[in-house]
Image 1 (cartoon, rainbow, N blue to C red):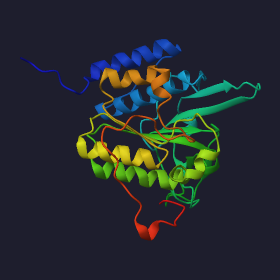
Image 2: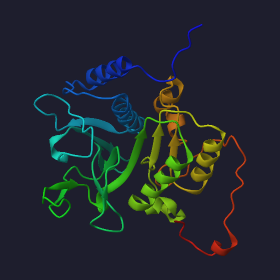
Image 3: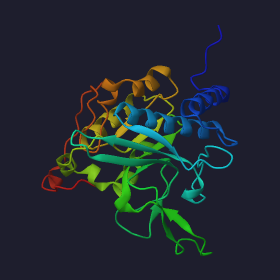
Length: 273
């Protein structure tokens, strides 16, 4: 009996893109993508779903002459690509807007001259800062300043492994260090916490790492995102509400007993790195 591959065929991703275009009434610009690129775009679409379920209204922004243009890599000016604006009005009539960007470079929380490019960026502004001091050629770099970063996600077409997950925590520390401190809980927020979105499925060792890190920090590790049931979690408000936000840790029930403890010599250290 022929078994079905756990990975999507690129034709299925093309179908997803067509559904995306029809939903938001846009034309998708020409693109040439590997499966990893399609997966990244599908994760971008899941984050749009997250904000819809959180009560935000989505608006397509910066459509180019050839249609909605995804930024499928770290290079290029942010202003040359398309993105979404998400807007929500609270009970007091106050309007909040964030911008959901694709492969936007972000400034370090610690060093103004250090930058990295997450796959998905949620920002307070769509007006990028600029510097000509990054490349040796004096070519301009456009980026989101540290004060305008809300959150970010990484999308990896991989089977989860320990080094991938621990390396992701390094990015969290560099860009959103407050998500590694309990002080984050003092400011209420429904914005998704920094998230690692993975196509493959956790094994027992990586599941333990996921549960340990999610219990300690404001982060999400989301696996098996080629599976319809996992993707469906982004269409369920109750399941979305279990995900970690900037002010609430993940509320998924652990599969394994957490046994981590803080070493005695670090017991008095308030900030976890």
